[in-house]
Image (tube, rainbow, N blue to C red; front, side):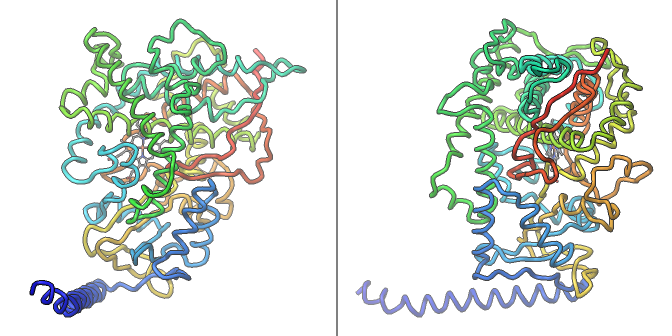
Length: 549
Ligand code: HEM
């Protein structure tokens, strides 16, 4: 009897459900059209896909990401050139996407309409695969609590203490020296890949800043170096880039984990599909979690022994490390690990990306390098042993240094893409209609991606030479929403001042010691890749010339 009822009822039931869903969709479409009319909106240009549901575009992005290709120049720049500074497209299963490189839209989504645009489920699905629930991946009260807890650690007084940075600089100099001098002219070094040294520098300073313990990855990576100061054996071994656990090195683990984030991001709402395809991502994440767990254990051990807290530059008192403060308010050890992991990942790759691009651009533009070195030696001298005058305030006052960093961040913003999801039906101020100036209606659930890389290169915003590295352009220029390497509004980067102080400090120290940076690769067009951050994909291979004393 049951079977008979089931089989006869199923078709009409299915038809009824499909009809209800269709009616619901029509009603929602009508509601949204009314909303658009009320707000005087017009649709932006639409980048249509050849295959249904954006299958061809998704496939193209996954393929390019797997091949470490430059999606900025092969996908986004041609897209904006063709459709204008704001356009829509359809993603997998009909998802709505909007891409924009417009300052007015950036201001709305990050600041004036902050509540309308969430970080959304995407971040936890993609970035969260590596760093779990943390300040960056979660919205709402969890995010607010995290932000309030971490903000004091980025106050000016905290980043003013650059003694730890100086120690990491000296380790980096040891690594350069270990590479040896040129056979013919001892003033020149052998070819070195500065990108690798920068990544170790930011790891060493980041572990000190957040965990109160420098993991000495720079020293540990020097071949044959058995430096007695390397105290945290297991942790240092994992960070040393020669560990071989799971067949991985530390740098490989991070780049595989970041590639996994990018793979998931390209699959968008279907990111879970990534689990069905073989990947090194999970192995890389296990490696990194083991590393962070060790750092947390080490820090806890030191807390018990009551040493290794840094000293406040303002009061001279011992202050709790970021990790101590986090552990005191957060009972869940997984949350402690994930929040700390995000901080380390955020500080390591972004700041190393800034340094890598800056030195590649200086190598490509010797005139600007000479100007920068002159500004640095005028402010800080050439005495590479007395460094007490390099404070965060003095770095800020070194104008040409600030311009050079701003210019590197403009041309190659480490966060080249920055996404949000519409929390409700809302609008963006511009991009619609035939001349792309009308407001655009944004339906709830639409993924809106700002592309700072494209916006920072707009000739109408930065002049005809927008593609050129010209630090001088910043003279008298007011920073506005056309320049957002650190984002803006309530969710802007917390580490901006810290990053600029670290990168500025190392730049000063390197250019006190070396007066020429000579590239070995042809830099006419520098290959780049974007996973989570935008990085030069072939490293920063240069020779450095020691300045005459
Ligand atoms: C050149 C270096 C850096 C760049 C270009 C950069 C850029 C960014 C960007 C674009 C965001 C996203 C904001 C948004 O969602 O709109 C962000 C978030 C964040 N960054 Fe940075 N960052 C840098 C360095 C750092 C450093 C060194 C730290 C920590 C020491 C840090 C900590 C954070 C945190 C905690 C967030 C999350 C903020 C939130 O969601 O409330 N960043 N950063």
